[in-house]
Length: 206
Figure 1 (cartoon, rainbow, N blue to C red):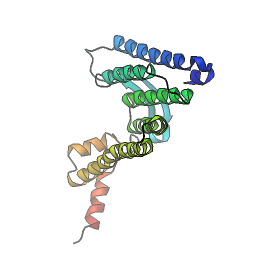
Figure 2: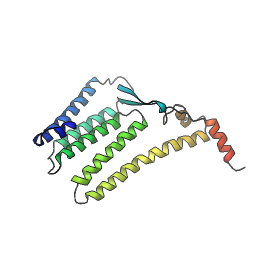
Figure 3: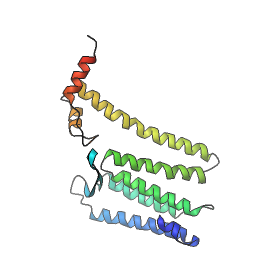
Figure 4: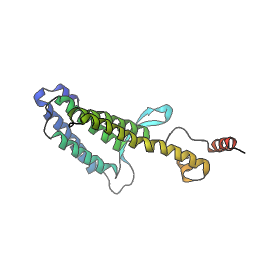
């Protein structure tokens, strides 16, 4: 993406397409090294990030994310190779490359917070792409797109911890309780279900 802004104007599209080809080749290399006989995550990368929350910058690939990663890389290259825009080509190709990187990060993310950051990072370039280079009602389409994407993520983001917490109060030995004990949502902190159950009994009418 930096190369798009540093190269001469006549080379902007070529540099962007070269970045798309490099991304597709990198995905092919990952596919070649992927062991289909091994279950779970492979080729992982873990970097300490937010130690106080027990979160790491973790990326890895599995059998589900790998085909999605390859498909997104192919689509990115096809879009970059299409007819160039008339206005602001540098911004256009930079936003496309940023959106492609955000989509790949969302597929490879190893925790909910990192997935959320990549998901939100994807919204901005796509909003600008629709709002600047869209059709006649591009402003309306851009706003609707951002609202739909926000709503699509906020529903599971809110319902997951709420359902898990309430299920733990109702059935302390249920599978949702074990999910909380495994610290799926907040890796550093565990809910004390005995205290939560006691709080529920004290707050209920007698």
